[in-house]
Amino acid sequence: MRFFSLLLAVAAVLAPIAAPAQPHDAAALIASQTEAMRALAMLDGVWRGPATVTEADGRRFGFVQTERIGPFLGGSIKVIEGRGYADDGAIRFNALGIVSFDPATRAYTMHSHAQGRVGDFAFVPTADGYRWEIALPAGRIRYVATVGADELHEVGDLVLDGRAPVRVFEMRLKRIGSTDWPAAGAVPPK
Image (tube, rainbow, N blue to C red; front, side, top):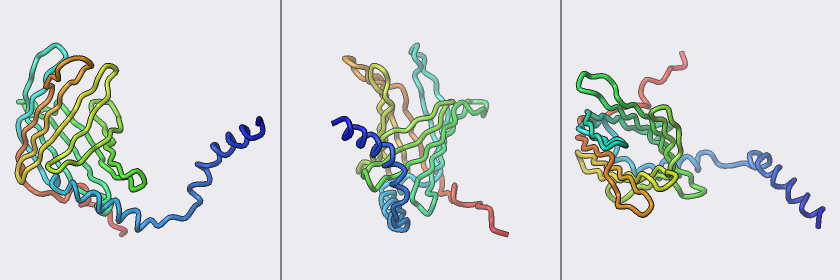
């Protein structure tokens, strides 16, 4: 029995090392990711509009939020940059998100950098937008967005265990144009 346990432990350690040695079809993998990202094509473009945030002490403040969203790596991922501007034009908020799809798990993930924090979050496309959540020790912040031809409306609700949700974020953006970002401007070979 002890030998069997040792054998299982060794196999568990060696499995990640052996897995990359197995051949895979990169083209098929990328094609699957690209196909899945088509569900988010409605996000591509440049967006701007009003946003509000409610701080922990209940104070609310408004600002102008912008988003530029586009495909990258041949359309196999989606890159999102959000910027919030104060009345004087100073940047109050800046975030970068990368949405990807894993064909093995059939799940989308958003890798995010914002306000000095980094995180990975389940990202779920819906029929008319998307949703994602940030886990908290006693609850979560739930974000839900609806996207129309020219409007992206996202809300964030603080959902604490045993309490009614509280709206802590809202943005209502209008599409102001298309963009070739982030794919444009690559460094040429010569």
